[in-house]
Length: 208
Image (cartoon, rainbow, N blue to C red; front, side):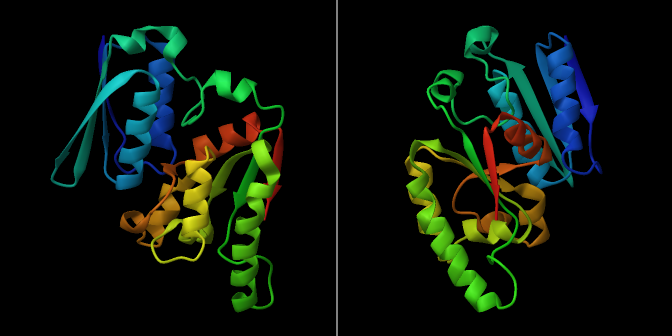
């Protein structure tokens, strides 16, 4: 069975939610999703991949056509990852007693003086590894996506944590809003479905 859905003009995270609903309700051999922006392209492509589809992307005029064909490996349900954008396997997650999620929504920590807030944010990010193995995922939304971009003082710290196994998700809509999609230097481009699911999976959420 093959299905095509047109999601151009839909706000985040509607394209990936429509894709998710179809894949999880039907045994699709292939699926084609039409979107019109880069964040939706990345989110839908990545979700299809986690569900065992081989993905190809074609850009035609202002539209982006994402095609997913079910792979042989993906037919093995034991290899699929049910949670959207889960970077760690179920086995890895099970080994962690505490899954701490860090939710950042600005590039400054606190209010009153932005210069001081920028320094405090760098200190905060630099100190996160002290959480040890419980540090599971960092989500960056709104102004916090700037932390993941080239030239920012926090970028190298985030890269070090990602290399150590920490999942970093960066809001695609926010990157697009600040014209920073091509400046992202760390993490996976994400959407609100991933954010909500991550909060549900976490044993502890720290907002800063």
